[in-house]
Amino acid sequence: MNARLKRDWKKPRYALIMIAAIALMLSGCGSSTSSKLSDDKTNVVTSFYPIYYLASEIGGDYANVINLIPTGVEPHDWSPKSRDLDTAAKAQLLLYNGAGLEGWIDDFLEGLPTNSKLMTGAMSEGITLLDADSEEHEEHDDHDHGDLDVDPHTWVSPKSMLVMADNVKQMLIKADAAHEEQFRANYEKVAEQLKTLDEQYTRELGALQNHEIVVSHQAFSYLARDYGLHEQSIMGLSPDAEPRAQDLLKLTKFVKENNVKYIFFEELVSSTLAETLANEADVETLVLNPVEGLTNEQQKNGDNYVTIMESNLQNLLKALQ
Image (tube, rainbow, N blue to C red):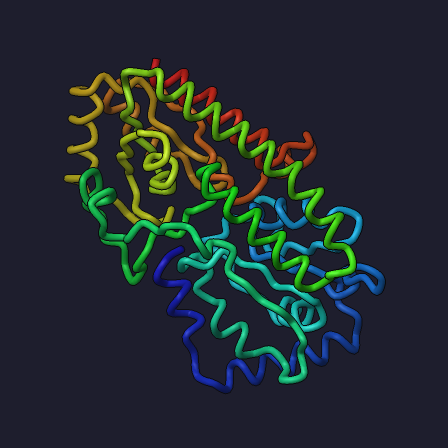
């Protein structure tokens, strides 16, 4: 999440009042987003795809899950609209990642009507967070992280996603205790899939001799920490952070000296820098998806967090053989 987005939402108090006022007007006109709210299910608003996936799977037939960020949109570049505030105000739950990913969240919550009964929670709660300037980052990355104190990309590791799944389950039970048994049963199915992913990553990456990966966006530090990888990134924690010329030269040298065969890029942001580095170092590119959102094609194909993380593992194995 970039510093610009955070600054844009730190505006005078009247801006919040205006947003709330516009939201109320839109609710009277019946906005398209508000029409998605359900009268007979627990309405859950999620801030981005990984939490939407967990809430949909665990909530099952008893939750109406609305994701704020549209398909194909990169969450670092997104900010909420007045209709989003209106939708959240009428829902029962608002689940977000936290750890600095949603720079808009504090002002968004302050803009809710005083009579809103919305329950909110950060789903990264309980995960040991990586400091933005920790040794894990500094060892392989000289980028300026702006005003982020911690790395927000918790969900990219199946180990972290297991913690987040438990948090989602607890929030659903809190909002709708009558369906606790169903939520727990659905959670067990999701947890089993995530545990299988975790075991696959641990076993298959642990068997490799090479652990050096070069990525376009520094979104894989939790994955690297949990599965013994070493991450080098072209850009910083925000995918639109501009690398310096010396960073690219340093990375080109690193790629050649460490026999790196592939530069990883992601679908929701431009692959130009990854391709530039790959051409300079005479290597190829591969996708490593931070699962921040689905593309339209992935949605049509029925892909989800688990299938994308399985593809990520196959691409990691191909690159590190």
